[in-house]
Length: 90
Image: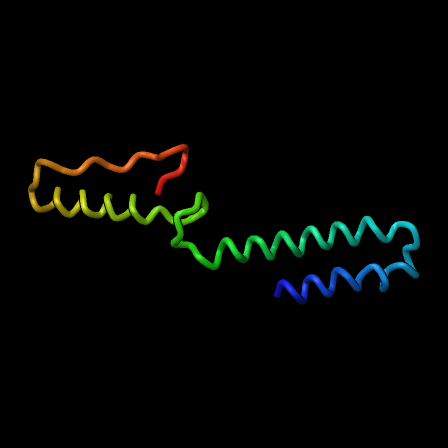
């Protein structure tokens, strides 16, 4: 997908130059920004279980389930819930 977007954005100015003239650069930059932004978003979404800020907080979910299961079994000493570190809940 990245190569297709790259080839499209490289050839787009040649296709638009005849009709837009000097204004060709503006729509080409806007379209390239959109395509490469979508490509970067796709890379973020393809691995939702990583340890990045945009990933799913699996450790916190696991701790919540663990606490709920122990509480339903009548345990009184529960592990503390995980707190966010630097604003990110892992």
